[in-house]
Image (tube, rainbow, N blue to C red):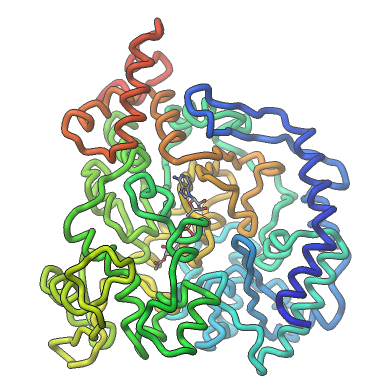
Length: 554
Ligand code: OAD
């Protein structure tokens, strides 16, 4: 059976049951609110449903009725993203003590091609300990050397050596399908995310958030002291930069045949476009990566894009809370466009660019830096424009040679797939996640590890708010139906950020951005309209919200 057939088989079997779940959850919905000002935005919170057909009880069923014995001999960790998934399979220790091995750690670090999925016994013990504590926020969670950027779409089950894994995977999928368990739940199981807790968790936010008002109130309250943000490409879409995985995103619109690459390389990129940003491919042939990024590199040099309202919301989270001292502990951005830098209030040290940034250049072989403007000059004159928009671009590409080691391996300082994230990520996350009260996740598919691990590394008592066009993160334990702590604001980042800032009484703080023309056009229009609406409304003054204890001081 081919990989696609396996997926189809699972999907056919489970689709009906998933639909039933969705329907029952929709019936059980306690709050479904639409913002009148932005009709594309839906704020959603559905109630906990104890019925046997809820996803939670299905997950419990999976645990009570173990998968076939052969499947249990090994552990699968599976992550999913829109329409596809990957699986890494690992021998499980005979020792019973290791049965509860923390798969989440494996999930983040496993890399089939690199063989980095194996962990030594000592680390397994450490992982087990942290699993038993029920919180993954210990500093030992990360082993920096083993953590590489992983896309959930990167797996080739067709390889001969993977045949055994494919057969195991098939059994697991079949067992899940027979139980009506969507792949996402299987993934959640694989990474041992305890959805049901024996120990009641004490939430600092009291009642579960059921509306964006609740989120705003919590941000303002004294109970919310520490906020983390995790952001992705959706944050910058309003500025004109496409995201990666949407239907009009970089991957879907990439024409691999235009790249300077061998037939095999083109085929591999067509099958999985994120392979164009793969470290191993880059070392073999740097041109596809440079061609894919040409427009982006030059746009960054020309400062073509402006920070969006979503970026400004994060800035105000810092400057307008806690009497101006700020509640933002850290912004972890997966974006490489550097737009956060325009928001001075965020503070350089408070932002971690987990996938590097596009405004520097370095050699992937010897790490020597290259002056960015010099690099851009070489990109402009040596790399062809696959979008066909720059008539001055060369017709053929030629590699950019490192002045230090002489190899063709100069690239923007971004983290390529199957390469390591910056140390600052591994050093900061274990400290930052401690005592977090609120995680705001914006504009990301959460498809890429290990950045997405922040979602489950924070304490269970923390509220998690997802602001995104689509519901994501199921495989990481985000559950807007059954988890009291999770809240989904489904819609455009700009609209939701604007709604939130209005509720927080921060809109007037944005007015200078209009005067200085510092917002993207569409965002400026949105803000101007909202300010006009407010001026016409006979409502209490925005910046004198009596509940806003923290924001008045600024
Ligand atoms: P993705 O393209 O995977 O996900 C963007 C998410 O934002 C999707 O869920 C979209 O539905 C959503 N979205 C798009 N526009 C939006 C908008 N205006 N408002 C709200 N939501 C919107 O991008 P990332 O999750 O950032 O790595 O991708 C993670 C990493 O994968 C990137 O850092 C990049 C990529 O390959 C590297 O390049 C190294």
